[in-house]
Length: 260
Ligand code: LHQ
Image (cartoon, rainbow, N blue to C red; front, side, top):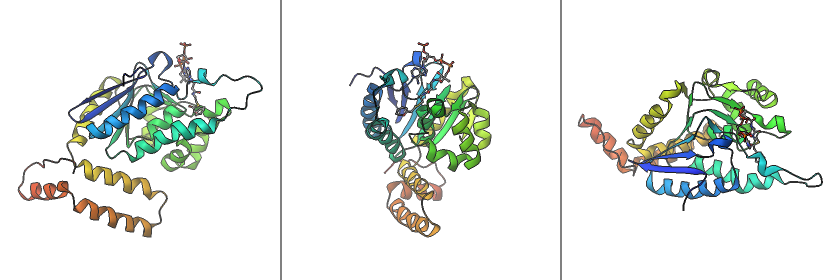
């Protein structure tokens, strides 16, 4: 498939997916969802780590609002777009059996902020901002934002971010624990690339299981989480990667993992 709204590059087991509508701050259109679905299928079969970033000065300005102009008598069903496009995308990223890094190069607004938060590790350029733009349109945080925000920054900050829709600078996002780290603008892609290459060389089989454990933890009791850890560890213990990790430790050499 030829891509028009994204760029997908895969090298050395690392996929770099760039949202590519820079004139519109990479706002999401229907075609982008289609292309993302196709791209993630290639990523799943060819890569062991994924970086998502944006072309130009923005990361992603959320839903392209020019696709949402309505006549006065229309009763648009926004739930449908979430059900068919955004929700499957967020679920797919969370379930992708490899680390997903968001390299937030500029503003991440609305569903663009949700997309960033769906990554496993969020790196941001120091100049980037995060905006819960939904309230400005009379909408509610979607694509996972109302799930992540209270869990990551606590209910007080989550509510104010959602209601005030003020830009949150990357440095504050880091201090609040919303993201992993902010870095100097010109270091962002180097850092993201270094991190992705490192992760892709690790036990990606084990990292995928870590994702499953962490994703389930918010909704589990301690008892259920202990049961899940037992089950996932059993699976981890059957992997080639585990055997290799132990052998490498005992032989005092670097491990050579294949993600199996
Ligand atoms: C845009 C957009 C945009 C189109 C910038 N659309 N063109 C909603 C509905 C349905 C179901 C699914 O869920 C959702 C979820 C959502 O995502 S709702 C939230 C949608 N996003 C927003 O409300 C953000 C709107 N954008 C902004 O507030 C500003 O553009 C921000 C604060 C992101 C950046 O401001 P500036 O740096 O001042 O840039 P700008 O406003 O000048 O934008 C540059 C261009 O990008 C401009 O186009 P133009 O042709 O005039 O140069 C904007 O119109 C365009 N653009 N966001 N979402």
